[in-house]
Length: 462
Image 1 (spheres, rainbow, N blue to C red):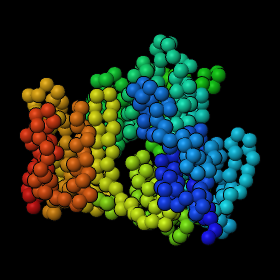
Image 2 (cartoon, rainbow, N blue to C red):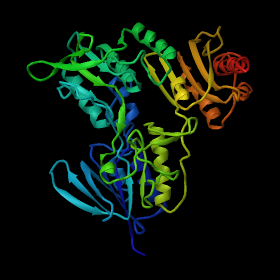
Image 3 (cartoon, helix red, strand yellow):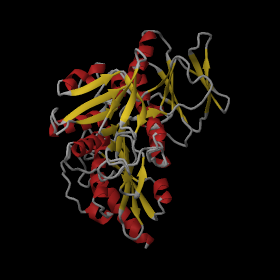
Image 4 (cartoon, helix red, strand yellow):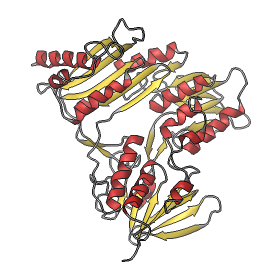
């Protein structure tokens, strides 16, 4: 039997998980695996970058789960600093470019995995390419930002502007505060964390301001101002304000990196992510798989495809893909949109739908918001916690949960994530047998208190 050839494009979570799982199922005599990675690092935690920047993680290499040498020791031909620049689907081959030498070559495949990830959104603004302006998506991005920060280490009055207040924006704001910067966050929305409803985002806004982070809502950035050396000196907004900056971090969000797929005519969704079936095969292509931040996935609550870039999903995609490539079978059924974050001592979590999402999906719903504490109120570590819950009108089906609070708040969202995946009603959530002891929760866990209030709201609405 001839040896099959697998080519993997992208050397981080989805790509190398797929390659590793395929290797577990098929040895080198059955499957030849070649992987291409354009950066300097592979199999790392991109989600950990803000904590390395902020100093909670001691070193860059602590974020790396498996080195290129470790992958190669498992008979995976991993080629670093090599970018795939063209897909020849009819010919079953990819064209690559060595980013150091500039040399190009073609590599044939029988099976192809696209795990090209996502890239930070960089608006087309004057000065956006100035020295000191950074997006943070890959470990290479993080290293470039760290190099910039270290050049000004020790000087007084260092100022940073973060553009955008999503997950990466608030996490990088905290990291820069930890490094001694005076931090301003500029964002266009009514409140930070657009992944939350505005009323919950307002809690985040107030907490950030209390922490000394100037958070400016409704701020449309129009220009990056530079000095005579071409380095950033300030950020200008449509209101005519200028915010001095020694470094600018873009936290506007990411978009799927799918130029290769688009040029090859592969199917893309509304957000530009690659479309796959439940086994992560690209729709209409038997021998091409895709996973990670470059794909769209099924939102199990709204019933539509969405781009939700998270490392948890990417690793699961890789396992599913590797099983398919290796002759097995696995599926990725979809997600409910669970995410957690923090800014300083404030924990932030959400799962399921926001009010805007529910309206876009054509759902009628009620909301319930409660204030509670993370532990029994008399316990010394008790911290404030706010829970907001959405439930479908009449049926009472749980639609979404948002949580903002002190230590011990965020991971409670996992209760809601399981309930959403199971299609539970808020009545059923109230009856969940959750663990209780004063150091861990009040007698009625805050999620259950919110569910009780949601049950009342559903009944009152008829």
